Length: 99
Image 1 (tube, rainbow, N blue to C red):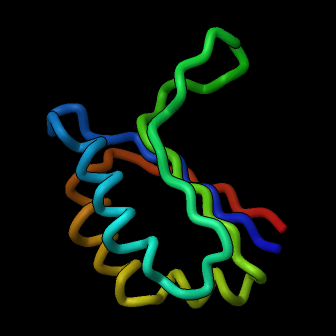
Image 2 (cartoon, one colour; image 1 turned 180 degrees about the horizontal axis):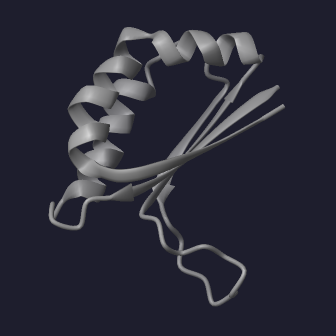
């Protein structure tokens, strides 16, 4: 198993950037083959101080292997997502990959 978690901070000057990011992930990323589990969503507010609440959207993907995740990274739909959705809507992203 290989997990790929991406935390996104959207551009505050774009009023619907969170919605655009969520819709773009569904459109471009969900159909990419090789993903065992796909979950994208908004930050869930918490009263626990240990929970980071500074971001707007998180993406959690599970692949059968690191090699499958490498194929995902160069898939045309992923590259299109980066250009059409990520770059215009996001100020920052942090990635956490683990096996």
